[in-house]
Length: 418
Image 1 (cartoon, rainbow, N blue to C red):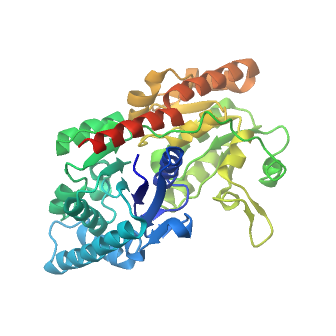
Image 2 (cartoon, rainbow, N blue to C red):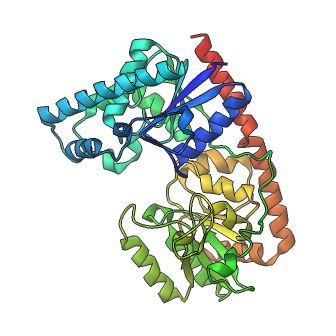
Image 3 (cartoon, one colour):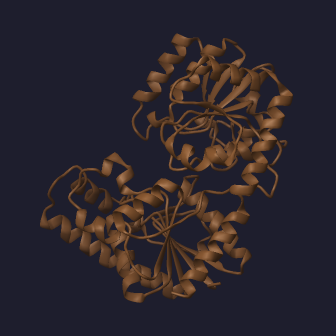
């Protein structure tokens, strides 16, 4: 195993999929006596193993200016090309600094060579790998062709070159079967599919003294039933289906709790959900102000809980998304042994459903049969317990750390023999 591994991305901070999955990879690699170091524009990793370059963050003013000039335009000016080239050269020099500082002998690029949120950094890393021949793994969570915001732009040359690059010293990893097929079709490169994973070998934590008052803190009564929507408030999450579901269940005890905030794509969708909930007579609790990445107290002295503090109190998780790259919240709910309603989004149908999970399933619409199944889950305790225990065992087989460990060893062995 390589001794010193360098993770590279625009950001390693918070609870986004890239930050979470990279931490899991680092944990597995540590067990094989490899030390992980972190290059990014923003990081919450230990400062002693981090190399922070502000210009590498996707929200740096230079990069925001470039994105504004590239996306949504059919042509770019020489000035834009010049700025991209200059920033890429600078970032490439910082990659040399990073690898020399920590004596890196394997690079793991976390989504930075997949989605072009930071074109100069993708170019810089591609050129660095081409110049050094350093072994690398590209861990690709979502590609530019999967996002409408990148469908019109004036950077096809950069996309062809670096998102992702086709170099002999890089091995590609995708998180779902559709991405594997599209990468082969569009780029002519093979990849290994490694799904997002969870530490199912370690039981989920129980509520403790800090978290045990969560229900009371957000205003739930003792006999209320907590139905959790553990996602951001954006249209593709299909949260209107969760509201409709509770309206069709027709029980005032059922309350919808939405954990994350709106704003990423405007507030119109949240306003629509509020109007729908009022029309359906459904109580919705928007609790993002009480949910954070770490436990703490806000300025008013209120407790801030983590999402992991919330799951143990959930009676049902709704996951009616129309699209997901994989579905981390799905695995989290299974980990905490909570039953789930799932809208059969494409990646779920192809990669997750065949594994044999027992879930309440809908196909774009809520039927009476779906509502009846959810009612049985909520009212029949033995049925619910059998379901969540079955799902835990299935997830242990297909989405545990042991699966990731085998896959990483295969990848690194392949690179060693390139």
